[in-house]
Image (tube, rainbow, N blue to C red):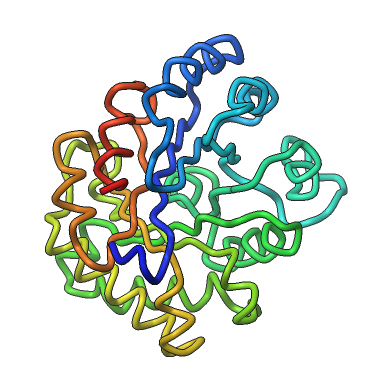
Length: 255
């Protein structure tokens, strides 16, 4: 991390877990453990939990995010939630392009771009996920693929709007599998992401963007990962559902 240039952010992605009551209980347990953290602390929770999360996080340093948003302001999109709706609730962050959305629900690079643009235009900070499958890594196309994903995801966004973007490198082969990229692998791809941003927006703008690692970061490997110069925190899955484990990661990013 380089905190002189950009903000370190640890964001939890709860996925499809926790009821509103369980949400309040977990955040209550987390609050004292992450108080005074030297990084931004974010919890991206299921839509039904947002109201409970916002209430439970009041008066703390925990910011609340959503796990997805639609690209239209309103309309006949059953089951979808607009960025404007999230903003109206008090949500500050939203995840776009997570590999589970791409794999199971048909999100493409193009729809990720549309969701990301809608999020930023609504005032949200978008955590944009990019990453390769195991097959793509073995084919040796990781760097080219990730660079392309970044370029398409940010298409149409200005340098000023880039300030509302976080990029999360999430190797698909490491998400929920227990496998983790080595710190060197994470650094290599995060560097590719930053170089891609520099080509699009200039080096100064690129150096100001938070780039997270998200492939099974946990309490045991967080220190090594965030010690790398271009790894500015993490997008945390399973470990964000355990107050103590999550707080250990937050502490690692607070150093």
